[in-house]
Image 1 (cartoon, rainbow, N blue to C red):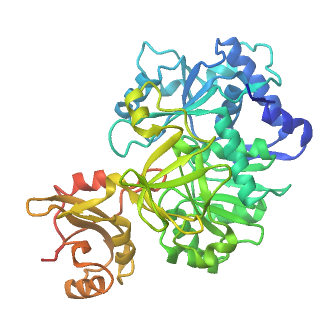
Image 2 (cartoon, helix red, strand yellow; image 1 turned 30 degrees about the vertical axis):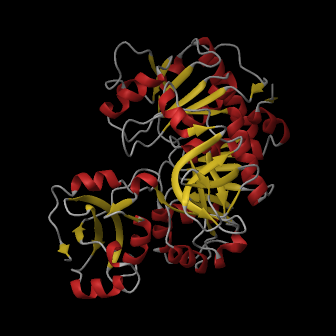
Image 3 (cartoon, one colour; image 1 turned 180 degrees about the horizontal axis):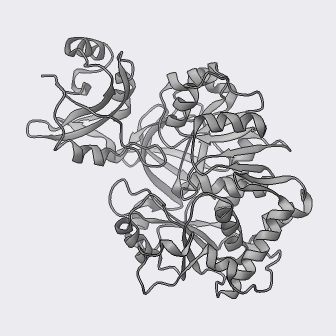
Length: 490
């Protein structure tokens, strides 16, 4: 049985007076944060929370949530972070599936959505409650269930991804082996804490001993200000965040050594533009089931490998499966991954677990290929492929070419039903001016096979995306039934 010491408590002893957390509310050293967490863990223990109890919480991204995350970890309880953007109707099946021992809200005013039979409390009430004995450093079991992180649910009911404490450890180790560590590393954290990408940063900070500058939401001007004032070296971004940063007049500060790009594929031209402005953006690949990124491109390789996500982080293994066989280099197929960051399965969902996990490998549902020298390129989701007249069409391939069309600011390609072809290629486009149909056809026909060129275009104010930046194609398909066709190419 593998175990480790309490990571935060360890850093409190080793780097006690170093900054651990900076928020708009204040600043905490590792020693101060550790003392706060020990106090809160004592309150939770007195409240009846014990090892492996599931605790769901819906809190803003602030110091309270950071303390709670580490306090629950110290007890050995299971984190169930709830998406603050979901409606009560959307949260209900998640609560039913997780069946938590306790649901925590920010204040007593926010309980209306919770079923009266559930045990609830607020962070306010915890602060006013009796204090138990402080929970000090203890051995943490790597095999214990550590978090149930629910998938974004772009299609169907969200599934509870079972992440172990060991998965968090190996995620931090894989990042360190790929990107290296500096004694004064500072993470600028503007990602949602209810997604795995945001959650893992909190644990990397206490494993690596680096500071976290936490903001409740992304604001480009605020981000740029903090980069200077807090000497930021690391940050995680999605493509829309990069776009917003590039709209600012200032270049990136010299302290920023890495900006991990995930959430959704990014056009190579965006990555190149970022580097020209001093933003060291590097593509990554990962998912909730892999405890965040497992493939990362190094900064030195971006100039000549902008279309790839990079090489797998140690000790992760990646393979491509095509027609139930190992694919040849360059051959496209489903991406399978194996390694210690993988989820244990889906909570109380054996059918989904059997469908996704096979002999220690995760079938990601993503499509891509490996180069001869082992670099991964991700092309699409299997479920997003458009099959038109028997031809498989990758939406991202078409989107990359649409973004080259003058006047197109953003776009998303998806399939719509067709009596003749089974599916037809459609595109939702954000553009200021009306596109010239003939020019559109001429530009796309030079770069795409005729069957890949969208025949239907919808003009939209914005492309619907989830909090990770992924296009909600199912939502677009539903909207297409009521949207007026803007351009139709025969």
